[in-house]
Length: 472
Image (cartoon, one colour):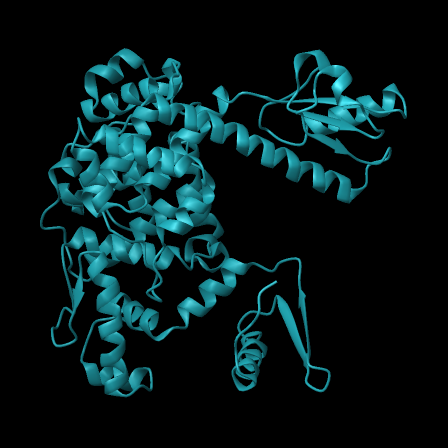
């Protein structure tokens, strides 16, 4: 329970704003009983916390200013002031706040220039894509409102890019729309980084991408491929690659030997060092999975690397928030990177350019390491009969995708589960934790068991990671 350290007037102001906000987002109702000092909030089944954030963000002054700079031709500071009913001083103050955000993305903004945004064009497009993606709502997309047009777009991806999820297709299509809007306004790519120019997608060549995906997508938008400069095509091909994650199944037809020959030695060394550090021998499909996705992460970091991920409010993602998702793995992976960088300085540069790098590594390697995770073992006893015990056992084993195993007392389980008192000393298990529940487990019993098993699994993983730390 958290204690709210706010004055009564401040709380009343927050409540009134929350009441008024239902005008913009109607999937909840808020009723304030002032005499009783009670607040009743009711949520509809369609309520989304992320939609609340997106709605507030899109109504913020900073977002409106940036949105205006993207969609319209800039005229003057006075024009913006009149359009949004804001004083010149307010706009200038907001501009100062915006520049702190833009600086993180290698951009600056000055309303004294006819082209207010200053920076490399590929950084500008990337920033606008991130900005609009934060408020993405499929129901509000023009392409989804026009059913026939949307079916054509999705059909292109279904045929030539089955490895892309629906949301990934929407994401690339959104980036393409931003690029076409910038081109339409006369903002062309004057240059692209070397690694963008030489980029190779593992599943589709540049020429096939242009012919089978880009050309028909442009046609849907009434644009001809012939009118697109080579740098524009190269950049879209690059973004098509690095905006995606590729699963083992997606990459099943790739040859590990060709991968080792044709791919960056930095990523190959990473995989080799990973096996050595964590004492695992990876299968070829796992090596390919890591090689491909590491390459995408590193390419993206080199081009768009930002020290922080910041939204249009200026809120930065802190490292503590990233570590919260991987409380044990994150510090271990961080140590791994620092040791790796003793041989490959490039990895420290990646980390300096991309604060989320360790988090991305944890996300990527989790799907590999989970296969090598030692099962959590348990023994189950019930005096309510074999069928009850069998039902409980099946439900426990089906409760998670993490490795679990039911074993006999003689195999020294990690946990004993029972609905009657057990003398653990008889079985040589006096140091083994025991979990007691009722013969007919309640919802609360299952919740308690899940919590205990999560805690035990965490201790097992922590012990394993400590052993690795001692080894290195």
